Image: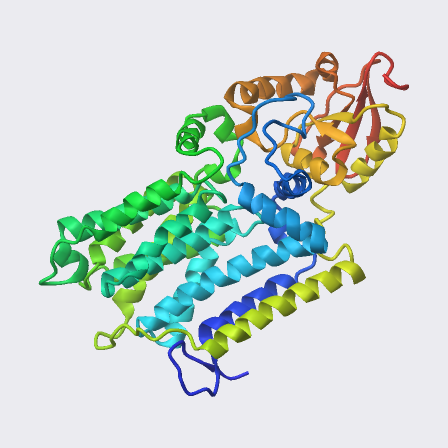
Length: 495
């Protein structure tokens, strides 16, 4: 296949960003037991989405656990849940993987397209895009955060276009935030970006657009409209207050791995160091808008070092900055859009790829399923067999909360969990209680009996010593991955 750059009108080849999009899409869809499913949160996200489709309403309280029945539940990412739930009903987990692959491929194709519009040579643009891609690969999971990264790129592109050539399209940004506020709480980062651009455009216009520029309050007005647009969600402006409450929940947040600082012993973070080194080496070039991109990059670096979740807020502005700094000095920024033929080609690829995953789901049902090396398939099969002798849903306590999320996917409504990874729903006080309870369980599983737990599920990989048996807490199942204890007055019969 012949490939041309983004601005080619020769008609002899496919635009490079479209080729990149299709290559990433196909590459991601060819992986068996796809790594985007390694974060087991997708289990309850899918089941929640299916529940919304079935009932036509957002559940107002918890439905998956037996420890918090009726507890209020704020579905701040219901749009993403609706998306993956609907696709799961259509094409199984293949449909979920397909949606994630499309979002990821589109994100980096857009970054590449912007770099090419700056006039960068193809190989340099691909290199910078690939660097950003590898910095953020730790976020390639079937979670709503990937949608936030895509929309972050979209608004940053739109704001850069407005900075270079003011126009009317900037007024469309509030529509993006209406969608964003119903998909993920990351819309707060987008609001911050719009505000920073607005402040620079108004206070230091010459540094923002170049010598001779005048103060421009338009972006600040757009920011206010974007802020109001985020109120168009089921919870209104209270959603922002809810985000503030979550940020203050220390115990709860310590459970969430992506909220911890990056583990720099992992080889993948070498790409972060490379990006930082490039920023230092090319720090001297002066260009209009340099300060606003450095402001975003500096804030993003601080957030990314504090929490792995925020690394895209550094790497994406840094990539845009490097694009400006490394482009040939005489090359003007291209205003040429993508040829219609290439967009049609990309759309056809999206449709055909969905047909492919639907066919694979019928022909090879387990191809896009969870990796059996990461989930307790056999232990859940054992518990499913026990559930037939119970007149109520089986109540399971798992020390691995990711496994609880998988139980929701694999066995709801036949089983209920004590706690899963919806820590924001359970709340800070409950999470503190679970921390203490989990420690006590390791010494005496019988502490779970007053909580009406039927079975205790343990991930052997996370423990060096296992809880002791007792007359009311018997080890009834063991494999290479897991342990199952039955709890009750006489653990050998129905409790």
